[in-house]
Image (cartoon, rainbow, N blue to C red; front, side, top):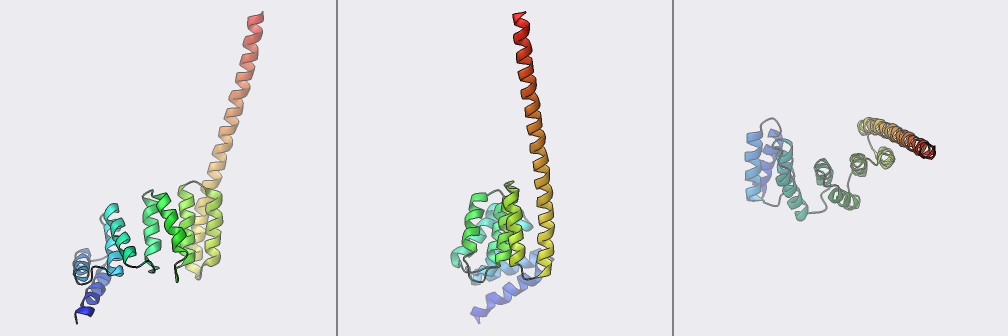
Length: 193
């Protein structure tokens, strides 16, 4: 009986989240007291910590504990990668992405989309666009493709803005260089006269 009791509490937590947070947390605490290595309970506790309480470090520790229990649980990776990206742990996110694509049963389209998001926040827009297009090719449903199209549109706008900004900066630098050359030449002529 004890073996299934943690599942009853886990189901109560899943049912209560996100509408009844108090009940969800209470049920998760019971579930984790019966089985402290329950990956689903640890993952849901991490989600509550970051989404509701904004506690990045505690959420990260719950994800790390869940992965220490089992590396072969595919539903943890996308959530954990997004957490790392949102909080600027880019190198750790990249390492996790590289490992996640090797996990059997993983949603590769979702992982590639996260890779595209990582490139986007690092302002590597060419790589982001290509990776998001690759994610669309791996997708298995239309909703995901529509979502990826929206992200691709946003990244393309940022890329265009970046190119315009770089072009304006180059034009400004050229103008300054021309003025400097002209001023130098005029100053030199004036000193000779």
